[in-house]
Image (cartoon, rainbow, N blue to C red):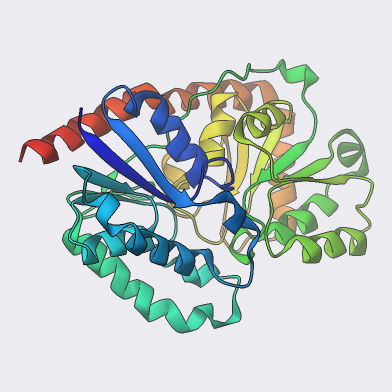
Length: 339
């Protein structure tokens, strides 16, 4: 059986955000076709915050050079891994998740000084990858791949749902503080019936907690922490609306997950989000630089015609079926191996 190494910075058990679930959902069907082995930083590295994980993982991949040479191909989900694969002359395909230059969202003050280096990494990947995929907008040299969704969470009755939810990394690029400002402008009766839940972890947690107190929302905002993927999807399924205010994205895994359980979304129309989130159908798109009152008005619009938005969201989720997406990926991989 063909042997493939899958490179992901942190294991799917510890990864938060969309990349971990993306890889895990592919594995369900990809493992039927290939012998897969995952190369991720050991779990105990997840608690190290002084040194960037990207640097540690780059060195980790290089240190596993002789092991990786024994595989027929590599599937990379992080740019530093693909860059290392290129240096080591190992055949690989790469999936671009979200922003091309990840250090533009760096938690470290010196991250900005590596922007040009990561631009170089992107060029090297594009030149050497057998196939480049993107979860964002399809473009020359990059093939669109949809977020694969597979789970056993049931769709909840509309009348039994309550609350709004954000799920993702608590970093500046997600602009969660703008959601708090918008939520604060909702009528008190809506907030009384719908708490705002925030799922995820990141460097902005303390700032967001202070913002909640500043806005007097302590009774209505819940910080859920970093949930495993099945628990997160179940939590989403119990809420009325998924809220997103990102300044940039590819296509967020969490929107696909929300649609899969019939939960509509109010989101900024960045990245490839407008290709799947259609205003007036399965949610509402707002401008990237939106007014808080406009975001609050979008939430109210969804609530006024909720059955319409929720039913369309569920229909929209069918395109993210992991089995179909994996079949297309397998065809591409086999084509590369044969050539």
